[in-house]
Length: 145
Image (cartoon, rainbow, N blue to C red; front, side, top):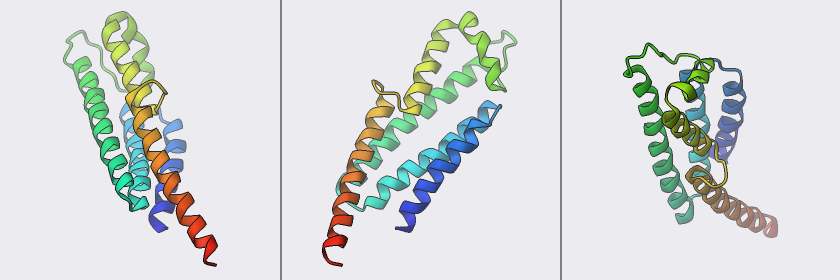
């Protein structure tokens, strides 16, 4: 119950904190705090399905995070004098390197959980397992009270 409350609080607070950020690194850090909330949500189920959803979510999240940092580091190694510190600095990326811009866009959409991408599938499976567990848990508690 405490883990469930902490996971929901982590997701909500990190989302609101990330909305006001101007720097890209801080945005990624607050996103990571929110994703830890999703992981705690799966862990709070305490079932095999919850652990499977947690492992799938961790796998997708690690791949997306490595891809995001590799994209940002490739901008620094480019040698064109293009440094990315603020989110507003990304507006030149589509003209400089369109393939990298598409890669970063798809990566960000996947991390956000936009439907046809892997991030959505892992979040959907995670919520499906957790809501099934919570419904069964609360109906069981309601029947015996």
